[in-house]
View 1 (cartoon, rainbow, N blue to C red):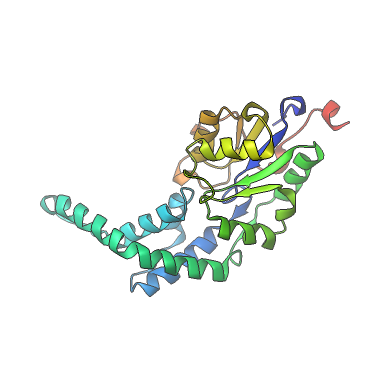
View 2 (view 1 turned 30 degrees about the vertical axis):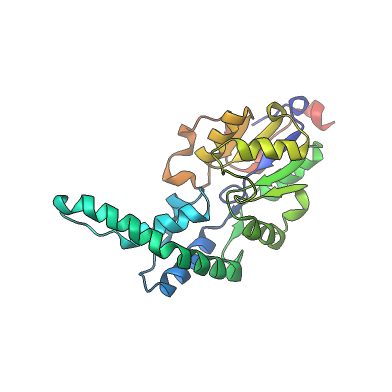
Length: 243
C-alpha cells in the first residue's frame, strides 16, 4: 500500500496482533490464573477471539467461558444470572493472579511479526512521529516493547489504563494525537482489528489494518478501513517522498 508522505505527520501503532504476537503470553498467564482459581485451562483457540478489548474484558470472558455449562432451555435464564455473579465474584482474585503471572512471563512466549522492524524504520525514515497505543495495561506494554527491541521507535506509549476509555472509543486516539502534536486527519492509525478501525473512524484518522492479527476471530478485510497490508514492511512511499 502506497502512502502519501505529504498528508501525514504521525502514526499511531497498535501492539498486540499488530507488532507482536502475544497470544502465547495470554494463554500461559490465563492458565496460571485459572489454576490458582482451581478452574480448568483454556487453549489458544479459546483465547484468540477474546484478545483486543483490554485485560479486564479478557479475564471476564475467559472466566465466563470456563464457568459456563450446557443447560436445558428452562434453566438458562437463571444460569445467566448466576454466571454473571460468579464472574464478578472471581474477578478480583483472578485479576490479581493474572497480573502476577503475566508480569512474570511478559514477552517470553511472544514474538515480533515479520516485517515489523522494517515497517517501523520506514515510518521513522519519513520523519513521522510515532506512538504506540494499546488496550494492554501500560505496565505490561512498556516492558514488552523493551524486551522486543521496539521501545526506541516511539516517543509516546499509552496503555488501556492511560485514559478514561479504551479503543474502540476515539478518546485514546484523540489524546494520543494531542501528545504527538498532530491533527487526527494527518495521523495514521495502524492496527489489526475493528477496535482500531472504529476508533480511527470516530477520531477522523486514516486507518490501515494488518491482515495477520486477531480481530476477535472475524475476517479483517470485512472491516471498514482505508487499506490492508500483509506486513508493516508493505507500507510504501512514493519515490519523491523517499528522495
